[in-house]
Amino acid sequence: MHLAHIHRTRGVAILCIVAMHCVDALDWSNNHQTYRFMVEVFQGTTVMFVMISGFLFEHLSDRFHYPSYLKTKFKNVVLPYLVVGLPGVLWFMSKPFFLEQNPELIGEPWWEQAAFLYLYGGSQLNHVLWFIPVLTIFYVFAPVFHFVIRHRTWFWTLVVLIPVSLLEHRATVQKYHHLELALYFLSAYMSGMLIGLYRQQVYAFCEKHFAALSAAFLLMLLGHFLLTDHVGSYVQEAFSSDNGLIDWIYVQKFILFFVVVTLLRRLDSRRMTTMDYVATVSFPIFFLHIYVLHVYSHLTHWQPHPGTFVGSMALLALVTACSAGLAYVTRTLFGRSSRMLIGA
Image (cartoon, rainbow, N blue to C red; front, side):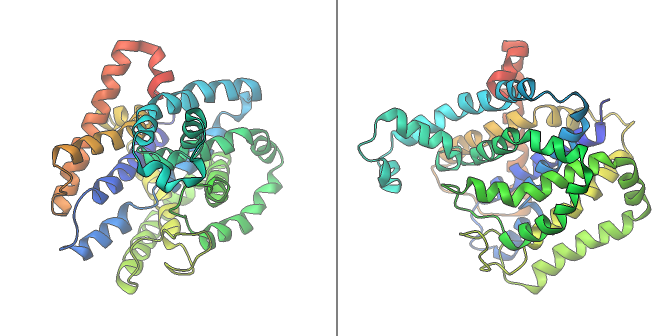
């Protein structure tokens, strides 16, 4: 059963993730308040992406077979990660600052240095690839999540896990932090599973209370923006309160998931060719967009343009179009084998 609204929600989530990285590619020194607002809107959308992953895991759980599941995830996620990550790994290893930043690798053979950059994907040029090793932790523990689906009382652990995520915050330092990041996203993944398990009841609730959910998201966003001086909610170390005690951006994006899903459910029967394609190639866009931004920065001689809302949206359109275009060319040339190269 194809769930168009979930498919399209994944497209919305990837656009927000790319938008955040486009915002960071511009110079906001003369427009700080707009930058803060853009961060408020786009930061933390990975929470939605993880909730979708949990939802889809539950949706396909009736045919769960662990060896087949791992084989599929290796072919469609891990193998593309190894392929797409290679240019970033080679580029980083060629720079003198690589060993300056990672002195523990001085004197180690090249293959150990490469393995380090693959294991800690956020340490290389394509820094967003930190997400794949963290997601792989969830793949490895798939039998545990399948057990939870079959023994639903275990979902009560969310009463503890959600507050843990809110207090932990998401650490910006990716090296050696995979388990902390997995803990941070665990509540989002299991919440997605729970939503999938009771999706008809959840959909009915969201339809009935759509206005209240939308208002809660907007109040949360504007409240955090207007009542604090924080720029987002990321911290250097887990469980730091540098950006406040509670990770309000996690709460925002958790609520936004229900708002977006409800809106897109209302449009299930509509033809949305562009959004459907973006959703289909969401993983390739995720894998490739940092390279596109790197080329953009090179062409601008590493002198970022002044940051504006219009400028960031124009850069988002450019980067998304180029990433989706690369995905289209790869899929045309390699057919079904492209899934093992770029994830779709």
